[in-house]
Length: 283
Image (cartoon, rainbow, N blue to C red; front, side, top):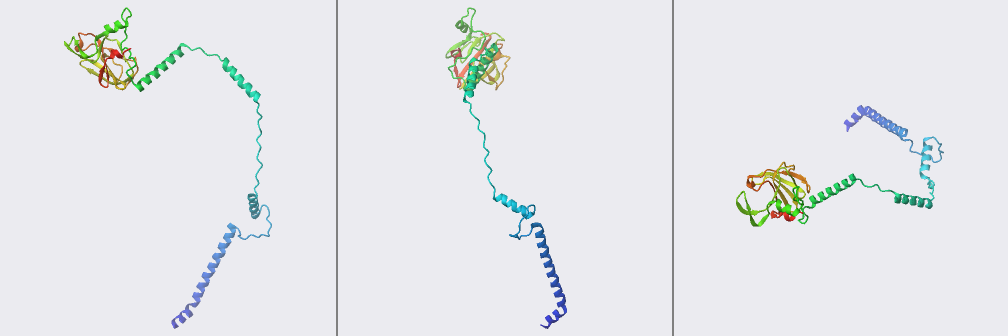
């Protein structure tokens, strides 16, 4: 106990001085804080008896409050009505109708007819390739000549067949010296004569063979496939779309397998891999 008394007697002055300095610093800080708050935020106290002068901070605030709380709806602007004139409208419609009735049609030119026909052919070709051959439509003749000197189509077709299609019985192959079935037909042609597609489709194969020379295969759709053999100067490639009647090649020199039969076009058509008589499908 005596130690504490001695401590306070000797150190009491310094302790009291320290406490006073701290208290003074705290009071000074509080005063500065309140002064700054009033400076930047304004006095929180409002004198309800004070009249606010327009232009002062408080006056402007009061004015804003009044204007925000006492907003009055502005009168709706009335849109002027447009008077309808049924008589004028009727006259305009009648005049338009009369002009339309009296409008002269421009006669179609040969170019217009040709363009329309070209469009129809293009649409027909697209429809053929999209739907495929159905087995009912007539196929086009693959060579140019279809008539003999007397204009007889049937006689020309008969004489144009070098070797007929025959899967029910055998036919004689003169060069080979044998009788056997023939899954296609050989049509007489001259070397260099144009060969045309009997129906539209897509070229699936172009290859050279020993028996039929260069062969072009065209997928006609719905399982129908056409093979053209004994060709040269082929002008289509694998993957090319082909239209009905399109020139695909020329008749080439006959292979050694059919030298005695003479220059010809070999045409074979199959349905799901089964041979079909091409002549029965050609128009």
